[in-house]
Image 1 (cartoon, rainbow, N blue to C red):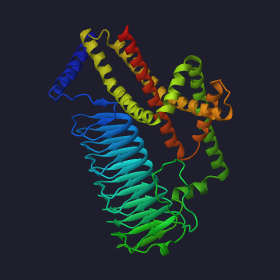
Image 2 (cartoon, rainbow, N blue to C red; image 1 turned 180 degrees about the vertical axis):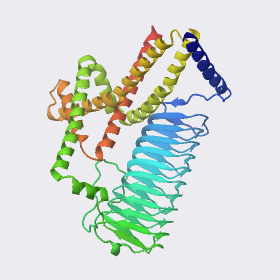
Image 3 (cartoon, helix red, strand yellow; image 1 turned 60 degrees about the horizontal axis):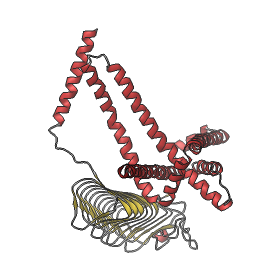
Image 4 (cartoon, one colour; image 1 turned 90 degrees about the vertical axis):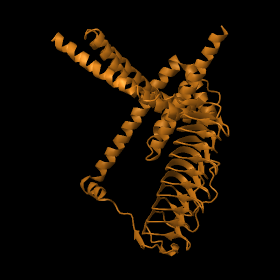
Length: 467
């Protein structure tokens, strides 16, 4: 038995070491660069992936790799030879800017005036494709308002879920837009599919919640296709009422009008499930999620107030003072953290195999158990910070803000925590909104934790140097 175990470890180790040897023929990949100044000057070239952050981010040079840009205001004036991930209050790819890969962006206002050789996936309050802009592949967008200016080009399809959409440019293939208000004056090369609201002659879209939304024109609900519009295929639109009097162009493939109808699954569910039972089940499910959020976050919040009150306060202050930087760093921290943990697991296994090879199987089991336990603890700790502590930080900040309005004399940290967590748990009950809300809260909290960690480690390093 001992001999078989020894042979197993030797063969396994030899195979892994051989595979690692083969990897040595691959050229060395340099570590990505991190720039906290927020500026890449004109004429400057970065031959690597770049993490660029600052209050104002301005990329005027060339990045030969992926660019992650986070800041209050982000300007891409140069060339990105790779994918672009941009997070900020406003993100702008100027007329001189270009991205050879795909663009992923989350912001309040997004403006694309330059060229994107790949696809764009974005979410914001408003997005505008300017007159000179070119998106060679597809656009995937979710937000309040999307405006495609005359002269802009999308090489393939538009897929958008919005309140309003203004399509004045050219879409080479299909346009699929789900929203309350859609206006078409440009060209759609193939088919168009719209889901729209009922026409309203005396009501405009409601004013957006967020100020400085970048929206210059609000559409009235309904579908409007202007006489100059050109649609190369079938236009299929879904509405509760026929809107043919507002369609002044004739699509090449004709017009198909349909009213919203329940799906077969929905009809079957209505027939087989009594309404009181369905209502009760949904209510119990919602209450269960509410209770889970409330209890778990209150427990963690209470622990933080008891053991780490100053650290909690510092994180909440960071979220308040640097919200967009927190969102950006939160995204990068989560991405790098989970990816790093994923890569660490085979390293732990390889190390235990090597130890087994050296000790002829004697310590392999113990080393593997210790290594995997440490990895599991690291994974659990990081997951706890991402999915729970981050929410507590933002909830505590919200509770403090509420108490600053209702009871400015309050000095206790407990009641702001309880109030903030309660508000958070209630908001998570809202359908559709809850997912985006939770993602935003997690990014804010995780980013704040990273900024505080970086600040504290820098302070310690400075103190050590001074000593």
